[in-house]
Image (tube, rainbow, N blue to C red; front, side, top):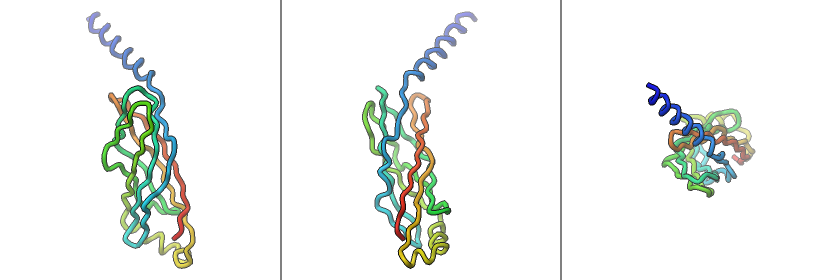
Length: 151
């Protein structure tokens, strides 16, 4: 029984020490929205984010939980189509795809009808987090980006 307790203590101590050795992964830059298409059928776009991994091991980015809003209307979500590997001690470009919500852009265009006719501007905002993990350790990287677009 004492031997099992010692092994359990050593394992827990090693895990705590190992998790304390990791440095914080940082979002260096949000480049913004590219290939933006906004119409009655919905929204299509990519958002590019540069992420720096200061650790000596690679991390995996597996998912993103980011909402995209146009003005006050939630128009879609930003997702990662394929898992991305953050190479050790380097910056990696992560491409997030917009998955539009049905009818959201149409509602925004009708609510801002005069702006859409005169070519007015509207705020495009992405807010949420990217999830990275390795060895069961999960790191959440917050993302907040705002961009003004013309209709």
